[in-house]
Structure formats: C-alpha cells, structure tokens
Amino acid sequence: MERTDLVIMKGRLEQMLEQVNNELGIVAPPAKEGSVLIIKVGSKPGQGLGYLEDKTMVLVDDASDLIGQQVAFRITMVHQTQHGKQLFAKMLVP
Image (cartoon, rainbow, N blue to C red):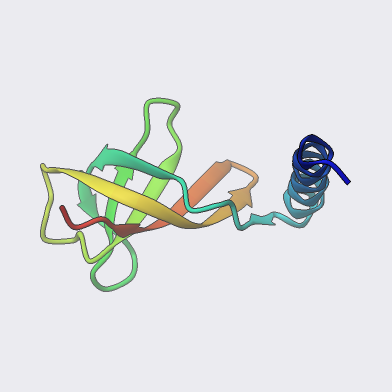
C-alpha cells in the first residue's frame, strides 16, 4: 500500500472515531495546543479556567494561581455537554 493511501485511510479513520466519540460525548483528540487567558479558578483544586474566542471553556491543570495571565496549554481531553465543549488541558512550560 502506498503512503498516500495510508494517509487517506488514517484521515478517514480519525473522522469516524471523532463521529463516534461525539455521539458518546467524549473526545480524546490528538494533543492540540493553544493559549488562553485564565480568568478564574476551576472546580477542581489547581485548575484555572478560561474561554477561547469561540466561547469554548478550557480547564487547565496547575493554572489556578495564574488568574489574569495568558497560558499555553495542550489538550488532554474534550468533553461534549449540552452547553458546548469543555477542554481539559495541561499547561505547557516554556
């Protein structure tokens, strides 16, 4: 099988997995990265909470003491709720 065929198959499998996971309400995406302004403490000890421009909530581990600061993160899990997605993330250390 050629490399291009493998890449196409991988893409289709990832799409199928995302559809199934969306129906279940939990998605474990590849470790995507981003940054967010921490605006308050999350519900679990050590969590900082912020929102992306599209209003997606991001809960970042070990960021509760960084309120008012922009932090880089890597997504560890996405949870789909009836109100939208919640991203759970670990802070990236520069």
